[in-house]
Length: 556
Ligand code: NAP
Image (cartoon, rainbow, N blue to C red; front, side):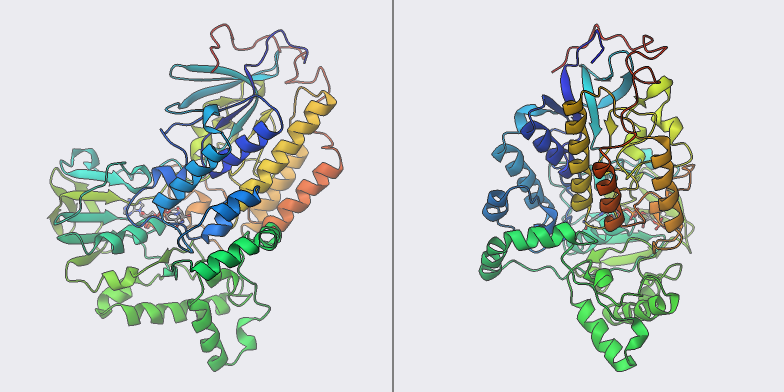
């Protein structure tokens, strides 16, 4: 490899979530030496950290799990169509044990810096008590992994218990008979609210902006359905593999106004009864694209909210007015609106009475102070770039990733970027737009392919050309305003984080385009991905000797 320093490992993977575990499996199967580091003490990523009551999939369980092993698919029996957090965490533990992956994972290890060393064509990755030199660095750090706390005066002064949904403790929280506040009504808030409402003495929901919540329609998987799932493994794998969204929901070929009002009402009622994302995918095909079609469906959902909530004034507060259905990522719920009919549940509209301060005993708004025993912060995440920007990654020519992405992420297929050789981030920004594990799985397959190719052909450095990064990033940014339903108020634009650059963080082009671009790169033998010796970032380039010291690399 033209280097005087050896790597400790071929591949270092950061993050033991759904994406990292699959990348680890692929790397190990291909015969690389591989190490994974994980900040937590267990596997599961999102399903490890978000252990709040009510947390569950809103993708069908059997489309979220892995498809690389027929045996795994057939032996693991999901109990519900949308399985809960504890079961999901058990699944990921089962996978790492079944495939003997745990011995590659170092827990309790947070990466503090990762620096590219051109002279050796390796990354020096360090954290507290940890230092490893790796040939390839794969940051499977997730898009929803850095919890966000709003800067409310006095937040730290609260003397009761306070929890963020994304950092939930392992020991169960005792809500019985407590005065509880939940701040935030995104997908996490609306899952936790109906589950704790029956236990608590009082529940005060602090809502700044309502969301269009529709029924998850979860139910147990029957014995007959289990048998059908097991028998249909290849068909399900292939259908999910080809699906534009990564789901099994069928697409409608009708537009909203093709139907009469009566037919439309009947169609909407059928869509209402579908599981989770069926509300978008199996809806009229123009529902997210045509504003009138979107308003029609939104009116139908608003009528459902009014029917579910006894108090008309509360119902009106729960109906979004700043965006139509799917203008933000819609949550899927079980008995959410019905929770507001309980005498112990109250909604505080922060648009009318904003939070002024958190005190030692409670939450103050323009309407006065309310005292609480527990505050639940369901206030979201620094989406997309949050974890990657905090990795301390420094690429070629000493360029920090945080700086390179200061105005928003620049990516190729949401999995790598120029200036950062041998660095990959499956499941990162610009990658997914549907059932996440399917997109990040596509990306992991691509990454495994390009690394295999580089190994076979003796290329020490893989770096995507600037032109390809520009092409993907520009297309994503343009389509964010044409194809994508999401409005700039969505956290998908980063607008929930004060001071963060406004830039689209999802894949607005969809999975077919992602797969097509991947195929083009593979067919061209990754044309342009392997810088010629002597060019910047390669071991024998000018300046390549100014590299991080490796003498203290202790490895695994
Ligand atoms: P979120 O959707 O970003 O919601 C955060 C909530 O906190 C919003 O209601 C927001 O109000 C509120 N908030 C933020 N700052 C506030 C402030 N200063 N004062 C008052 N309220 C404030 O976060 P999330 O609910 O954790 O969900 C994030 C994503 O995680 C979801 O969209 C989904 O992709 C994923 N998720 C999935 C599932 C699942 O079912 N599989 C479950 C949970 C989460 P505004 O809207 O006014 O900003």
